[in-house]
Structure formats: structure tokens, C-alpha cells
Length: 445
Image (cartoon, rainbow, N blue to C red; front, top):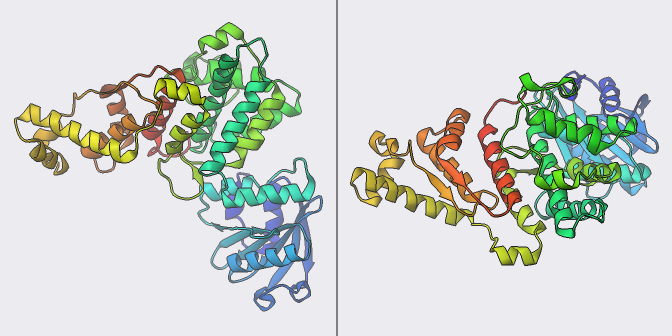
């Protein structure tokens, strides 16, 4: 049963073992006397029980009117006693569930059971499984999942470290710079798919990649040769009508043209297969530890596409960055350049001043807006796409305040152009523009 449906089916503490089972841990129902727990606010806890276990990691369920406060304080009390586990606070009347981990300074995740958010379900899923390291390691991973630790510099450092490990895992016969390019290409593709996956577009699941990886490792198949290569080449780069039997076995997978899922010349030259251990570490240490959203500038703990520019700049070799003049345009400069460029373009077309032309654009004047139908905006050094993305957002908003996906796609196909000496920059620009085009579309296939 999908996790969202499991959450919606929770109406009492007795239902929590089913949630624990969905996370891959052992469900238990062992009632406890709330007074005997000697926890803060014991008088407000109406029911208590052990509802699950993963080795020495224990799931404690508490029925209470203030689940977030109670779960947080109970988790800290358990941590002080040396207990390792998580606390599930449930208020069935208000349909709220709170989760906290028995370690110092644990954050609290609150979920609306009737309408659980994708972020909430994603956090919960990352509490599942066991992995190496025992109960303490599971508790530490759980805190990372609840806190959304994967933002800003944490994500960049993890990405760079993963890139270094994957580069080292490639055959020594491949020249050093080419090895790094190949590794970056592989990680970029998977990163792209995590943004797509959060939309539910990979066979309708936001756990598609993790589940396929686990199945591949369990059957001792090659992650690169038996999972990712067939997914990239023959599935994602092919229209559904042209896919073979193996590609159709992946289920409902979108056709993602644009070059990211076409074989790179270096792949054709070297035909390397990245070891499964390197891929397992990439998923465990990087992709599965962070939450993703297809929305630019998203608030909260999710990884948003707008941070790809800083990641891309950070993983380039310093010498390469200096030699190529690779620096990324600040948003304020993007805004000023676009405003000046659009004003000059429209003013030249309609014979008005630039100030008046810009004002007419903002006021929705049909004559001024009509000039933008065939405008061509070129970025000769696209980098990670900051300028072109800003142009897409500005043109889409001018045509419609909601900037519908159909309008965005039309702008992408008719008005925006970009080039760059670095192929990875071109692909990252494509990635961000593609994500911007789909961000407003409904989730699911």
C-alpha cells in the first residue's frame, strides 16, 4: 500500500504498527502504562505502546493532544536515558502525527494525516530500512531525514565527495580529466531523475530509483550495466512507441529528449562500467539522504534546481574554472540585464522610449507584449542556465501571471537559445529549463 494511503488510514495508536511495517521494520503492539514511562506531560498521554522495532531501535507510540511537543520532549527524555529509537506522537482528533528521534537536538516532523505532503512522506520513507551500523547509525540517519540536512553546503560537499569517489572508481586507463567528466555525467543524470521522480513521473512512484537499485543489488546484477544503462539508453531517450520489451518493463517512464540521455562521445570511446559498490555509495550517501523539489527557490529543506549552479561551479577544477572564466551571474544582475534588454527591444519595435516600453510591458499592453512573440534571447556562455532561466520566468510571467506549463514550453521552443564550451554546462542548463517547464504540471503520469 502506498505510504500516503497508510498515513490516511491511521485513526488510532493501534494503526501505527502498520506504518512501521511499511517502513520495513518489525511491527509490534506492546501496550505500556503512560505513567510508568515517567515522561514529560505524562498526564496528557492517553495511550502508549511499543509499535515497532528494528534491532535495538524501538518505535514508541504516544496518543496525545499536542503530538509535536510531546514527541520532541519524550524523545529527548529517552535519549537522556540512553534509549535509541523514535517517538510517534498521534492526535487522532486533529489528524496530526509527529515524529522525533531519541538523540540530542532531534527535530520534529509533523504530518497532516488526511493530506500528507510529498515532503513528509519522503522524510518518513528515509526512516525505513536498516543498513550498516546498527541502531545508533539508524537513529543518526533518521535525524538527517527529519531535519532535511541536505541543503546548501551540506549537499555540495556530499556531491563533491561522491564525484571524487566515483572518479576514482573508474578504470585507471581512462585519462584523469575524462574520468571526472564521465563521473560527473553519470551523477548529473541521476540527479536529474531525482527531480523528475519527486513529481511521481517514474512509473508513478517517488521511490522508483531506490526500489530498482535495491532489487538490482539483491539479485547481484550490475547497477550500471543492468539498471542505469537500459534506463538511460532505450527508455528515457526513446518515445514509448519505439521502446523494446526491456524498456517497457520499467513501467510508465517519460520520454526525456534534449541530449542528457544520449550516449556521450567519451562513453562510446571508453565503454566503462562503474562498479556497483560505487553506485550503491552514491545513492546511500548522496541521493537518498536529501529531499528534492522541482520548484526553483523552494523554501524549507528540499534540494531545488536553483542550487545546481553552485554545485556545478564547485565541482569544476579551479584551474579549469579560472581558464574558462566560469562564474555565475547573480540573480539581481540577471534581472537588470533582462529588464534593460526587453525594454530596448520593445522600444525599437514600437517607437517608444525604453522607460515607457517597460511600463507598457508590466501593464500588459497588447502591442508591447506582441513584440515578444518572436524575440530571440541568446546566452553565449550559458553556464548552469541562470540567465536563460530568468528569461523564461520573465517572459512566462509577462504572457500570463500563472506562467502555465504550456506557455513555458512554447517559450523554450521558440525564444531561448544558449551555447557553452563545456558540455556539462549545456546539460545542466537543459536540466534546469526542463524542470522549470514541468514544475507547474500535475504530479504523476
